[in-house]
Image (cartoon, rainbow, N blue to C red; front, side, top):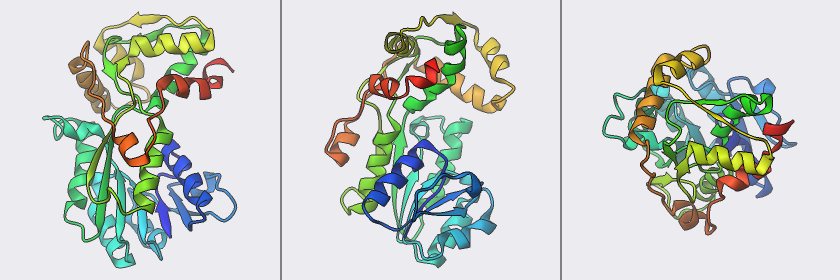
Length: 278
């Protein structure tokens, strides 16, 4: 049995479908399992990664886990997984742990704590460290559909957007094959380009004009304050400041593990064009 945590996430959804297609036993965990839309034969279970009381039931009979990073309860999760007989965990971490200031960055620290909590775990641990998700572009959908400009404090900051399906395919390979297990894997999309270039791509695919409002960092932080904690906003601003005008390094990990080149950002936009137009 394979437990997939963070069941409502894009990566978890893709991974669940892949494993089920293989005919493998899959259990999908979520803080709100009643909101999961699972396929026939896939069990949904309560697994709140901030609540250790949900761990034993979610892990009963499980041998492998796809784990979203939650550093605050990682020790309890390892204990419960050990008691359940889990022999392999694939952790969805983040490239943010690679920065020299990872421990001081709230985004990096959250993932780093999860990695450190698994470092001495008795089971095999494989770590995935993707950079920016292509799906982050969905945050621009509202303004684009409304014909409003996109507020950006660093429009020329570079990212390396990776398609969530590529992350899922790497996780699938690690969960179903022995090769590449037990190590850390840095994942990127096949190209690095700026937020400005990404918006130009969306405009070209959708046929909708997209404009940028180049705002000051503090103004952007105030704009997102209603739905983003200040420390997270500060972490993002710091990262974008450091990557402003500096292309991100690209890895070939997706191809090395899956045998197929990673999907482009353009392909993601083409698949999700309705998000920006309907």
